[in-house]
Image (cartoon, rainbow over all chains, first blue to last red; front, top):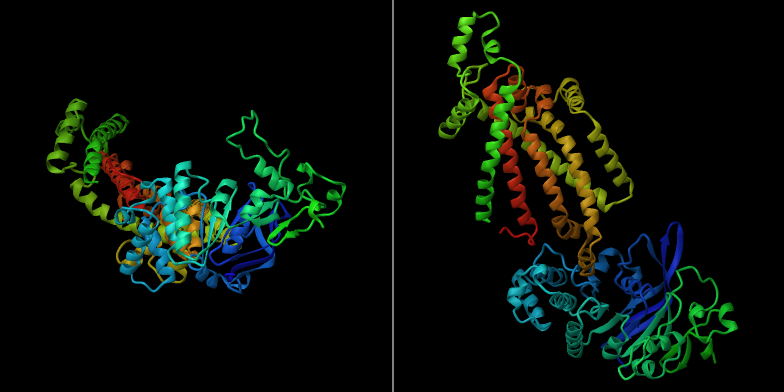
Length: 323
Length: 307
């Protein structure tokens, strides 16, 4: 089995709001191996993005604070790093693609300048060599008029093009880990498919591990090897992608899968999980999903379930699977 | 770009005509008799009439206006000052140099101090440095210019003896008046810069730059400042235009021979040719500064196109 690139252990992140501290990411552990794509799925506000920002060392602080845990990249604990050393990791070893391609590029600089910046930061290439590398990267992400785009400004590009540029920036220094935070959410469906195809082909060429954050289960099925489902700051289920789709264990995961409309069914109303995500800090005891759970038991209100191992590589945080 | 500037300059012409008519009428319709001011109140009625005829003050207003404009356009001649009997254009050019030097020096203070304070306050938001910066700028905005000028004079000229109290000459004469004049603008620049930088710091692309591994202060000085400067440039340009209109108070306090003191003297003696020339000059200056600001937008923001 390939070596572990990223190993997160017991990560806990708190946010301070109006004098009170809330835990938004609670005791999360996972790892990603070389060449592997791990999906991180969950509703808005479940802590997906904070988890990814923690790995980048970019949790806004204040109000955010990493309370405990370890984030190991190739064995080294990132949380012990000084800011100066973080900057050698970011964009170089670990890079990130964001959800909003429209606003994620600096509007007053050319595409070329923004690509050159990351290359020049992490390599010793000259200006000329960096430009050559930038143009090569633009071609690699499927931009045909690379020289022309190199000299363009972000507002002259479409959303799909900008996301390609973001991917080029992300991969420019051959990172060991790429974090993609909902990279296709803001794009049209046809462009989404193009970007996913691009990421798949790039993945096949490089051995970059990918942490793919999304709330779209269809994208997960397409892209990922393994999946984690997050709910209210906790991982509720973790499995290989086939196991998760064919044999979901957690009631939340089942609910999510059930709420995907199926083309052969002619239902009037789409299925939805009743109720709402609990506000951070509102559940002190027991299972966080119990208010919305169709199989809720007495035990759920008293004790919080752990992440029980069901089979090899399949775990679920539910009393139904406690044995 | 070039055709944009040409069109803007052409657009100024009707505006200048209106300004010249207003300034001409404004001065002529207000009470106050230049003949009596010029030659004293004791001259005989016959002499009075003769002088009035000679200065052309008996002609209808539109004739006087036409004569005035024709001289300006054809010879650059704004007439002879009633008071000093010297050529208005020459005097204005001489004093304009002084005002320009003073204004540029003040803007230099304002931009250097203002940007520095604004950037530090924004990046160290809600720390003691931010608070200190903002309290200082509020104080600077509230202090009357003449008082601040006198205080500087008292400390650096009278007590320490490092700098001359007033007048013009070498660089040392420039320091105190320009600092006095620049203080208020520096405070405004600082507050604008702070809020503008804070806005930009929230942008997604700042996070992208951090995710690339760029150092914090480099991000502020490049990605952030380039966008944040756009509103600051507008405001600075406006202030520059105002200062060019003559720093009346500061020029009086430091006996600086610029346009501001010229304007005051001319109004007090109802020196029509000078007042008219100055009003027109101030309008032109303001329009030119505005044009420069508009052109500078394009240099800062590639999304702006001049069409």
